[in-house]
Length: 277
Image (cartoon, rainbow, N blue to C red; front, side, top):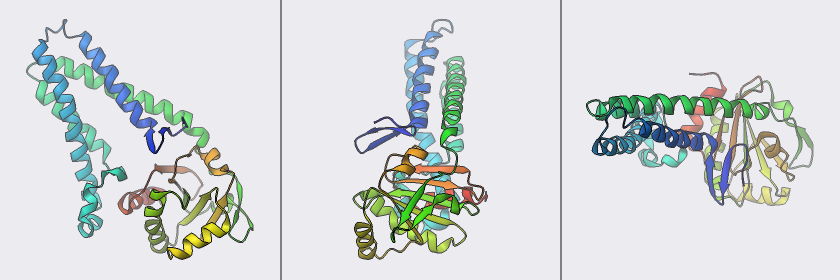
């Protein structure tokens, strides 16, 4: 399934920003290849250049991860095993990109510096244009979802009532394993951030199923809503589960996360929603 957020291949989600990035890399490699003859780059040096791209990818990912861990070291010091759980998408992307670019230039400065510079300028330009275009397209989904749902007591609740405080909206279902794993994280965050609305919106299940699930797992959320028709997903373009959206007090979307969210990534995104840097 293709949605505004990603391409969904069964349980695998490929976010558009990631696809834009790798498509930009592929096109930039093709462009750099066309200049090999003009700059007299030998086949051996071209192979070295291509190898440096993959090396830079790993170096960027490792350094970007380490910087992210350092920024939230208080958490990772207590949960060191979570450092290697990169599925939480916790990376400092600016540091990752800069370190990768420096590696590519350093490895190719003597043999293919101009090819390396063409590649870097092209890939950064294409990625920037692609992400800017994607962001413009996403503006349709940037507004606070104006939908009316019901709570566990079948009372109507308009989501607009939550505008005025930073708000986290989580789309989930009890049959979803990643949702189940992240629920205690969100439950703890709600207790630690009383100034933030945590709005849990169940997708497609009835009140009895949800109540039984919450009691069984000893979870208690202040705002638990039912969305059996998937209205929130349609308004936000977030069809994968779990999905989490972060709005500031003015009701503007400042961040989002597809897939299971860790405590550290949640902390970082909560800072964005609350205007903390």
